[in-house]
Length: 311
Image (cartoon, rainbow, N blue to C red):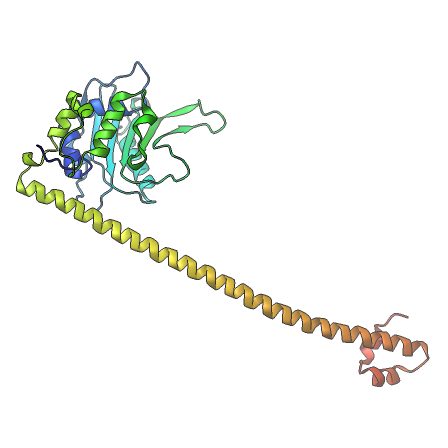
């Protein structure tokens, strides 16, 4: 009975898809939204220096980068959890791969499309049950008009349900492999074992094929993921508390302002009411023929205020 390691781990993912091109070809042909007559026949991994190794620093990294027989570039990533910065980083990496195709003075016609496939072991879109998200640059008024160049496929693995893409059997099998195989797997499901490529990918996950140092790196990766998840959760909680405190402060401020405003308004109303009453009395006294000095004494109004009274 074999004991398997989780293929979502950076070490295992790169071993499967970064060292065995026929497995990556099978995976891309199954997952990518290609036309029916489109099929990748061969790929070439891009030079290692174009795939920065930042293991242990960030767990959202470029895992595998290759070019196919159509000269299209593919960036394949395994993202353990979602962060708000992921979209920008993904766009940045794709844009960098796009512009680096040209040398100085070369024609723009030489540019080929760049596809990003991001497998995310987390949920980021809570508005829909869809797990497969295909993004292109489109005309908002006519979505059939597409600007070729950059395309992005984002897959939320926790939402994956085999029934949702039953018309693409191989895609279902590969996504089941990534979703179901882990340290608790003792027997590979027969549906996965019946596909030669997936069976080989599973063999590459067997713990017995790894050295002690590789197993240590495997565990170190999960430690780094847990630490980063904790830090992100603590940061989000702190931001949430800060926002709540700010909202409470605003509410208190509004209540105090309203209370003071009502008091000031009431006092102002009383003052204005008294003034109007005095002016009305002064007007009546004026009609009786009293002098301004006499009226001023009787009402405590000034001569200037009395002069403003209309007859």
